Length: 432
Image (tube, rainbow, N blue to C red; front, side):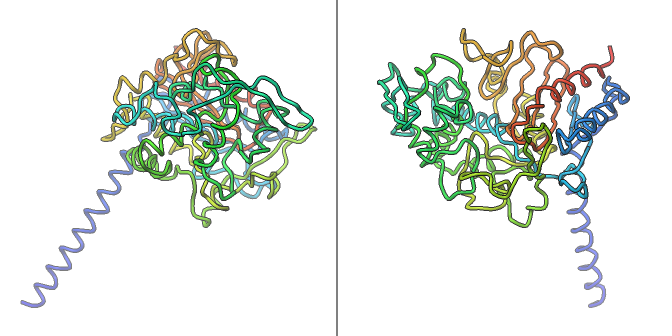
């Protein structure tokens, strides 16, 4: 009798853990679905040209390599790893490498903002000063002295709104966009453009930015800047949560993007794809351990890990970013997770800047995304963005297509060239 009971317990335990294992496998299978290119109307032979194209850039020492992911109709149809993450070519790029997404963080923080709008915790036309008091009275730059970095300013006619932060029309500058003026002002006040290893917070930075002059009247024009960093602080105040906790709880965990975050444990430093810089002769070199007063290459795993940059702070894998893209393509839904209502998700990739001109091409700008119009290959309505470390993605609703390519060269001058070639290959692979 005793023996029978023991056997029964052992059998029950075995079945319990077998069921748990089986359930986990089912979740993983559902998380990523795969198909061959031909099954979704694309040519594998054409897509294979991506590897050849990237390798040419590697051989000419313009990039160390790239990880590429293409999905159509909700299924991953093409993944490739080309090149090496290190200068000695001993560590090949892998699909599970962690890439600094930089400005590809902006769409995620924009989604967080729209979630809070849906929840009634903020309004698009709220003044930013409602959440960050230093923005309640703002000024616009009228003159700047490059010799001593002093400036004059005058009160703005209106104050920036949440909507203007979302659309990059609030007038908050980036230093790198105008180093002699914006860069000097921001550096003087200890404000970084990108995520930093220093023990500072976005609450401190956002407060400082509200006390500095804007570069133009709010809503007057489109200008790329630290708008989404300020927006990240708005999310914190409106939600009552730290930005990373909010995004984890409301976006990345629900969609299963478990390797997509602001910071990681130091033990994962070896998983980080290494950062490269472009030398004056046009070839790449591994970034030094110290990249200036604000930056180190391994900031996602080392340093203070306190600066939650809404405009540049997240790091992750191609597959994890794909999950976010697929949720957007599905009008805010992925699996059982609904991170946005359909009408809200759709509004994010429609033009939201009215008659203002978008200075980077023929398209327009929505809430956190560039929106294509009149481009050579991408259909109108395709939405996209990229990052300072040469990452790029686009979502094409017309063809139910997602394209992601991750590289790690800081502000490579070759990005327009390689992005253009990638686009040409992808669209030439669609079967007529």
